[in-house]
Amino acid sequence: MLRGINVGGHNKVKMAQLKLLCESIGFADISTYIQTGNVLFSSRETSLILQQQLEQALLSEFGFKLAVTIRSIEALEAVQANLSIKDIDQLQDSSKLMVSFLSEIAPDNALQLLQPYLHSSERLQLSGTELYLYCPNGYGKTKLTNNLLEKKLVLTATTRNWKTLLKLCQLSLER
Image (cartoon, rainbow, N blue to C red; front, side):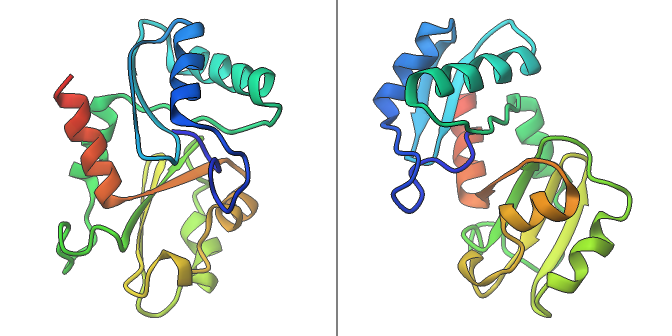
């Protein structure tokens, strides 16, 4: 998952170009999903090596630095299983339920640091390297953006809605 591509006209990357770039650095069985930098692929390398290779290739090819987050299908399935926010319909509310994939485990006081920015109707859950946010008024209205998460928690984050997460899991299993 790439952070911050094709958002607001910035960091434009066509998925066909991204796929070719991934092929050029040795990724196999590559496919992309929507225009926000979701890449499915196979590799025998470690996540850290893959992340570094792709970040460097993106910088070389497109001239901008992008954060890359890599999760295995097993990790994505665990994200689904670890959701414990109550009283939401995962399918009905799939565009209002967000998962921020963090570059590392958040500090112990992460929820305390974020609480002042949480709207009264929003709910937050932290589980390992994932932060779940239910925002019934929509992600566009929340203050808990990637930029705020990165500033307050001093790490890198990229966020996807639940619908995208479910689709990535489905596509991964169909491979």
